[in-house]
Amino acid sequence: MFTRGFFIVLLFQALVADQQSAITTNTAMSESKKWIVTTTGERDLDEVRQDLTKKGFKVEQVLDQIGCLTGSASEEVAHQLRSMPGIADVSPDADIQLPPADDPVTW
Image (cartoon, rainbow, N blue to C red; front, side, top):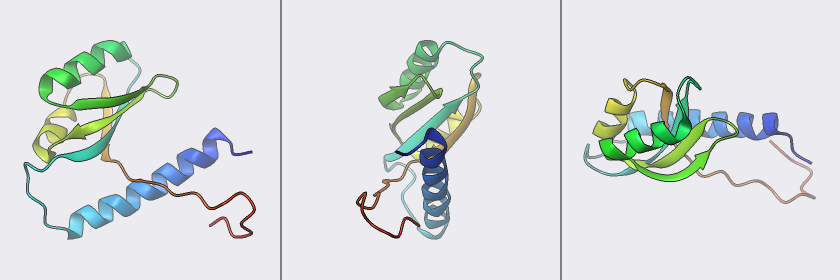
């Protein structure tokens, strides 16, 4: 059984890899990308969701137990979100593929 910490480590590794990839990839500023928004916990998550939507962020998931939201927006919108009250971080999202449970190699 995997713990929450295990998934957070996997998510962090995927985010770092995706950020390094984004630095070397030249993409159009208006192209929509997937993002993970981490909140500070100082504001109600539903309030934050409404504010993100007003700024042009398309919310796909609200992860209230960990204070995060996922969704899509352009680089410009993501940059604007970083300065909003109650937002701790806005990072590129990445797909994670876990190996089969009986796979001897986990990393």
